[in-house]
Image 1 (cartoon, rainbow over the protein chains, first blue to last red):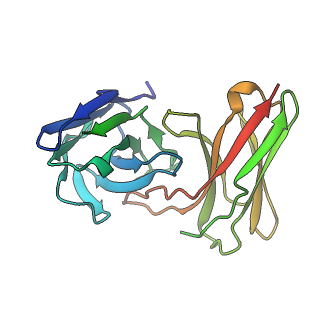
Image 2: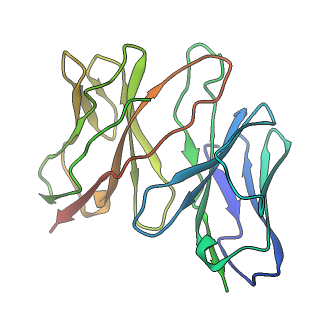
Amino acid sequence: DTEVTQTPKHLVMGMTNKKSLKCEQHMGHRAMYWYKQKAKKPPELMFVYSYEKLSINESVPSRFSPECPNSSLLNLHLHALQPEDSALYLCASSQGLGTVPVNTEAFFGQGTRLTVV
Amino acid sequence: DAKTTQPPSMDCAEGRAANLPCNHSTISGNEYVYWYRQIHSQGPQYIIHGLKNNETNEMASLIITEDRKSSTLILPHATLRDTAVYYCIVRALSSGSARQLTFGSGTQLTVLP
């Protein structure tokens, strides 16, 4: 199974709502990532989790709150978002943490298309 | 991680080889060259990676120059389904920690019928 599953595929939320994006993988990967992608732009890194601990936060506003409850799951909690936060949110996972040989490719989910109204 | 430069767009006739160039003149000795592609509205997909030797898999070939300052991704027989944005990424590997992918602007490849 080389899939990263993201739910929901589409989400429309108001600026006062609280919602969560979910990401799941069963490849035994110990690194998981959240990216944000605006239209016609490349993906931009938001967060990196390594062994279920947050290792990189790219100065993301606190209205985005990541959570890694176990090695297979990654959540992104959303609260009080702005319309400019509307984007495709991508989750990815990879191995490549001290293993030999190093399997380094990242697997991406299909993303959640978020619209903030 | 080293910066990459790619042409913003390219066209290729269906059935012909698509050659996508990438410049990475500041690449370090421990940095690999990775290629990903993103078909419209989908997540990025890994294609291939290499360090200094040429690499080939079922999807593509990767040719890296001897000085490692540039590389070319080759899709040998392009199909309409290969229309996508292709990203060349240079990335160091380190054990014991996650290494994120940093995407540049990429090349929009359009395969024409």
